[in-house]
Image (cartoon, rainbow, N blue to C red; front, side, top):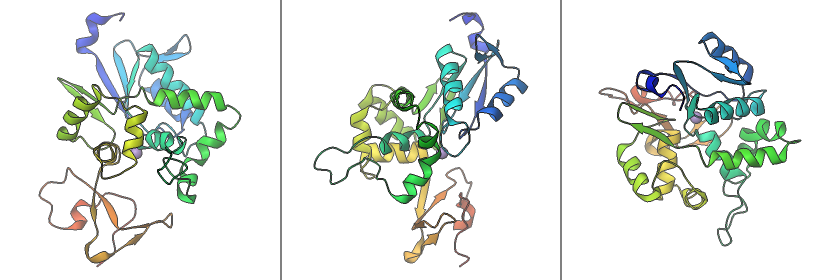
Length: 244
Ligand SMILES: [Mn+2]
């Protein structure tokens, strides 16, 4: 790589969930001193690290994907996978015969809604979308280097070591994607923990109805909480727990 003698002292800019906000991302990069060279953002001394969730929700998902992928391919950025890219792979992959499902991630109204903006914005560009789906397989779940680590949701050292043994790297393949559809399998636990984080079951069969109308028996937790005593100390999600 050009300028590799600077790599050791190179700084990282960690950039979280873009969710289709390509213009905001471009402004952010410019504010941080990145500029376009041959149409791709780069920085002389720094590298962006995208920690996943480029797609869904926002108005310019295609543009965000092109911007990020171009930077990754140029070497001016790195990326790890978010749960939204993982969900898109499952949603767009047919289940295998005998699984009792049509799609790996079933096309329920809730799943449809979560990916709707992405599919709408790619509606006239199906080949491009398929190409991005292929690209998602090349996105590592984690970056693990001597002095630097990155993951979308939760770093679980034991799962990551096991994953490296099984997969021989940091990427999933189609077999692993299929295996991960069973949440209690090793593959399911890897994807759920690394990409979604940790959760706890509510006590005594309680349920929460979220703002999206979806009823949950689990809530997301802060695995980084120090010395927690109550559920309130570890709750980490937009929807509040039942007051009791
Ligand atoms: Mn996420």
